[in-house]
Amino acid sequence: MLICALGLGACVDSAISGVLPPIEDATADGLADARPDDGADLDAETALDAETDPGGDGAAEVDGDAAPETDADSQIVGDLETADALDAEVTPEIEAEVAPETTPDGDSELTPEIQPDLLTETEAELDAVPDSEPDTEVDADIGPPGCETTAQCDDLDPCSVDSCEAGTCRHVRVPGCCLETTDCDDGNACTGDACLLLGPFGICQHTPLPAPGCCLNAAECPSVACQSVSCSSFQCLYSDTGNPECCTVDADCQNGSVCTLDTCKDGTCAHVPTGDPSCCKTTAWLVEDFSGEDPMVFDDGSPSRWQRLEGFSTSEPWALHFGDPETGSYDTGERTFGTAQLRTIEVPQGNAWPTLRFRVWLDIEAAPTRDDLNVRLLVGNSAFEVWNKSKLAPEQYGVWNDVSLALPQAVQGQEVRVQFNFDSIDAVNNGGQGVYLDDIELGNICP
Image 1: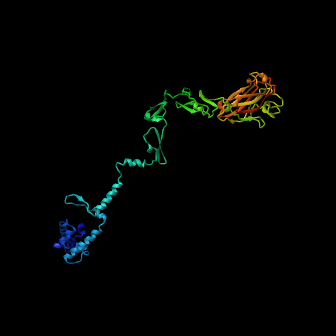
Image 2: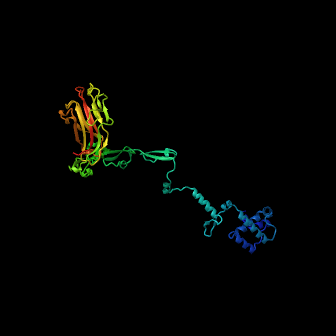
Image 3: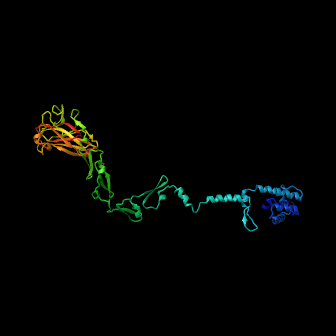
């Protein structure tokens, strides 16, 4: 029996002798020390073994070798030592099966030997069981788990396109889709924003508002000096024109020269010379006597065109001629025309008298509607006509004439090119010698 295996010497002795021996005080004290609560059970168990095997043979087969024949006291002490050794070899599995003892109060508690193992096993089992209510804050920090299909990424938002890419959920917002009006705010004060619901989702609508600074086209935008205007996304947009002569107040026009009175008039700077002779200093920015290469020429490809010609000039030996040197006229039997453009120069700031001077000789038709001759000034991308043949009387034809042109103050600080243009207009009466130019000068020239 299990009780005997736990080291009760009286049970072993009974099995050997077949009778229940008398229990002396010393033996009783030893048993009380080993099992203080089992005295009554030991007597009953011993008596039961004696009745089961009165001759003692069965018990002798089991326990005869374990206990030598000696007196009763020695036998009991030896059996107790053997029982203690058996107790030390009991496996954890057997210990786990032993029922907990009952305390005097009736409560059940684990023995000191069994309690640590059971607690360790219980803690392991508790760790293996998932939380029924996971920590929301921790889950949010870890992030959503990976995905295998698009269905796992459904965020229940009808305005997003969900997909699973490389194990990660992606949610792309559908442009213009909305669930409420606040989803449609475009940050534009010139539009009224609304969400037109069509079911579980809606479409954003932006309606133009009639408010200051709002527009449907650029014509509805107020003009601002020195600013170009456009209408974009129902808003008036302004940008700087980049013109240094554009202004809003006189202070915008100061050129740093004491020789000019600088004012802003109608959004454009005006620089009027003070008239102080001490302010005038002649400075040439460009001088051309055609002793070098031909200027840039644009023509119709006929023999009658702008080209350098030697032997007829005011500063020997070259001049610029429009005509055909072979025939001595500009008659080609057809209309003929061409342009001579001088090199580009940059006009410096602070000049009171920007001036263009040149010498011209004419043998062309004097009628205003025939044989046009003019001088143009190219400033940036704009062209301005500053002179034409109407400035000369018919009696000035056939002789060299000195021409001096005061240029607009706006050329200061600008890149400038000078063009001379001739056009016969028609193919008749073109037998004259044409046009000669020489000694062209551009600079600040004192009057």
